[in-house]
Image 1 (cartoon, one colour):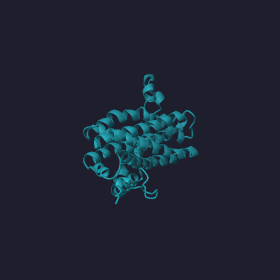
Image 2 (spheres, rainbow, N blue to C red; image 1 turned 90 degrees about the vertical axis):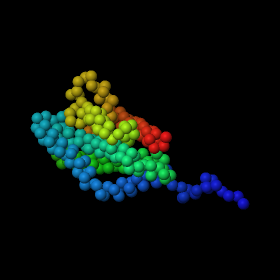
Image 3 (spheres, one colour; image 1 turned 180 degrees about the horizontal axis):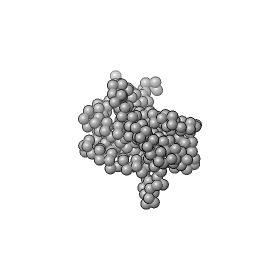
Image 4 (spheres, rainbow, N blue to C red; image 1 turned 60 degrees about the horizontal axis):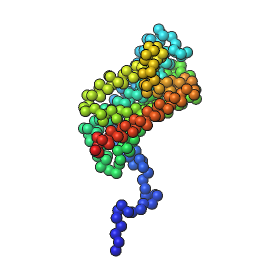
Length: 270
């Protein structure tokens, strides 16, 4: 009598699970189940903070500045708040929550005890963070429309841009969370890296106001390319030059994906 080894059993196409789908489904179900408990606290901070900036700076400085590039300052700043809302929601979650789940809660160890690969874990986690940050970024966008931002067909691309960029920034946050030895080191990343990137991205003022020596540094800033792409789409001014910004966003997301998987493999498997 011949016994068939389990590894030799051929599964029919109906019995085979698609790659990534089981991890994606499990992560999204877990996050939605947990999110119903803490969403008021998280949503309050993620939505109110950019709206406070928009109200304070937009009304106060807007009366002094007048217009920027043919648009009112509240509209200019409002689109900047769309980006910062997405950026902080994705990066902060990618850094702090990922570190806590890996180091203290051991959630990823439990996930990897199932037939899940690290790349599936990283992709599923980042997809949830990106979707959440994309939704949060829509709040300042709606406020900016309310203060006079013209509604055009290219405006519909703004949430898609935030979703793709949020995926990349979430992955970058997950990669950084694997590099630092303790949770407090992430505060250094926020103050020493993330804040300068935001200030040199054209969120609060046009980057051409910076000194000439800063131009090469601005071109290397991924937040700047996301900002330009978001603002041009919101104002209906997308053109061939934006293909360069699209390339930076896509290549940056792909690089962050590779780095996050490599770092998570080293922390959880090696």
